[in-house]
Length: 195
Image (cartoon, rainbow, N blue to C red):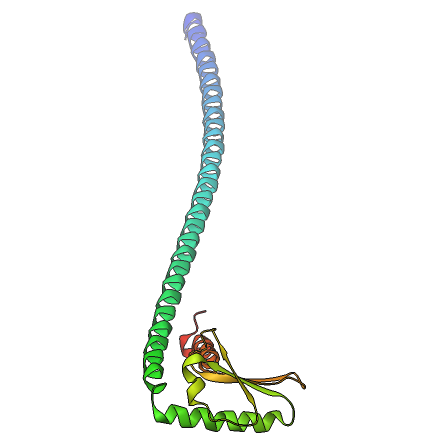
């Protein structure tokens, strides 16, 4: 081996070592850049995912609120419709009852019941100045007794009110009062209650 060959070999070995070192350095830099790039991509991906998660949660919350509001509104509307239907049903019943009462008020049975109940009320009120108040149409149906008879222009439908003026005690046996109580009872019946 001559000197030139020896130098060529040494230069080639040196170049190989330098090239290998440069390649190693290049590979380390490429790996470092890849790692940094992957880290940045992961950070950006995480930020995007977090933003998407919060957006989704916000939209889900809006959807739930809208749904609950619509359900509440629908339930209120249905309840109001049921209340109107219940009121119509009760008013229909009361109208039918009132029609039957109007027929009853023209019977001899009503006259007998009226006088029997007045007599009982006068007995309950005891001694004193007793006033029995009836509608104008019933004045002639009331049998005389130990009480004064007055008429009223109020729409009591039928029946009477009896009062002991001295004791300030009143018995209200008017049909209008009884109908009002029955109407209230119908509204309070469990079967007709709306929660």
